[in-house]
Image 1: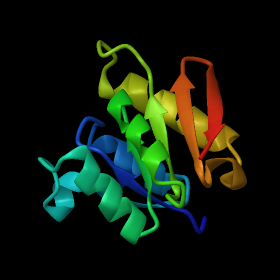
Image 2: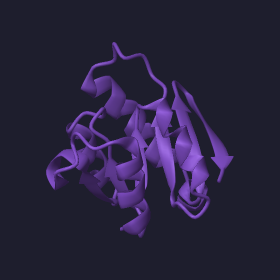
Image 3: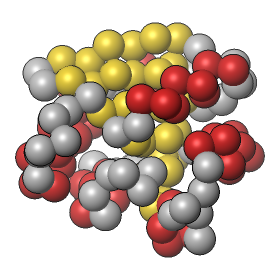
Length: 120
């Protein structure tokens, strides 16, 4: 079991939460905690207060950089034509590859076949 915790944004498939859980991480889905329609800033604040790394497809979450003490974010830059199964395959491959310490205090951009880390 990993000690890191994630929060899944509403633009990610619900099934992605199970993929994250299956790799040993704790995850909350914004739709399950009454934040499905929340503004990005509200999700960032919630993630900050609860020490959760945001998992999203929304590139606007780059504003997280204004919060240097934030645990971080993982932004998936994949074609929006990807079905949930395709996105979840990339998510699983990413989680199987990345080290926990790479996720902390960073923005990670995940693309097909690679990811880039940007420290906060």
